Amino acid sequence: MNTSNPYQDDRGNNDRSITREGGGDLPYPGKGGAAVPAPGGPFLAAENMTGGYGAADILHDCTLTVEKGQIAVIVGPNGAGKSTAMKAVFGMLNLRGGHVKLDGEDITALTPQDRVAKGMGFVPQTNNVFPSMSVEENLEMGAFIRKDDFRSTMEQVFDLFPILKDKRRQPAGELSGGQRQQVAVGRALMTQPKLLMLDEPTAGVSPIVMDELFDRIIEVARTGISILMVEQNARQALEIADRGYVLVQGANRYTDTGAALLADPEVRRTFLGG
Ligand SMILES: Nc1ncnc2c1ncn2[C@@H]1O[C@H](COP(=O)(O)OP(=O)(O)OP(=O)(O)O)[C@@H](O)[C@H]1O
Ligand SMILES: [Mg+2]
Image 1: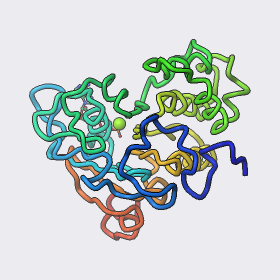
Image 2: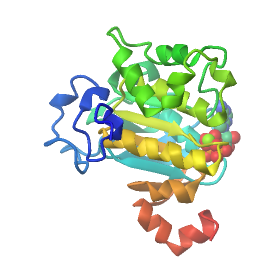
Image 3: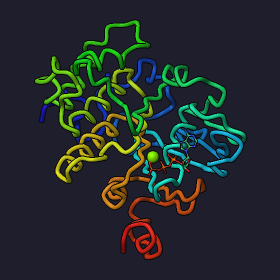
């Protein structure tokens, strides 16, 4: 095992260098091991979100929570509002109701950029890399809010996704779909987020590449970063989910552990193809 890589520490996070400076004053005891719920509630609490793009609401009382270092997965049919819910959490949608709290702090009124400064990283479903820029330039763009030296973070991204180091001078648009998704995830990691939000990170990739990417996402979570992820590959994603959400028509239909949802005959029949 490469112990210099915090992502590859399979005993939890003993090296928090990838996480945000100042994370040390969070009220979590111990290093690594199981995730610990914050005393004031979950790390991300996006609760009772109601809103949409115009007059009609898309989200109806939608609630999504993620504990520190855990993986939450949102599944549901096309058009259910999964991406809309992600945008709402990230501040790209005006909510008519509900709130978003990060580590106990109400951030509902903040812009997306201010949310990045608070520790959110977002990989959108589409257009998530700059195709004409090199891999390295994409990662540099990811670090846009940082004033400090981010080279060690870039090295950590390269440790997580070694192929990106080999291809760092290549335009991101020339990479395979799976590699482009690695660039997108790497770009979001450049701000050292505490919550990483991924909208369909495995869209259009082969099952092998999907498994690879899920393994890397698990490694990221083990460094203490919380993950909120939308996935079309519902069954496989729920297998790695501490918490799963089935969204239908902008509302929570089922919420449980990933394992419980996978075992639920009704969920299987209706949403997982039997
Ligand atoms: N920018 C927009 N303006 C107006 N309506 C939108 C916009 N984006 C999405 N919608 C509508 O909001 C609803 C939810 O869309 P959303 O993209 O959130 O679904 P989704 O669950 O992410 O679907 P998919 O699985 O296809 O990615 C749909 O009816 C869609 O047409
Ligand atoms: Mg979507």
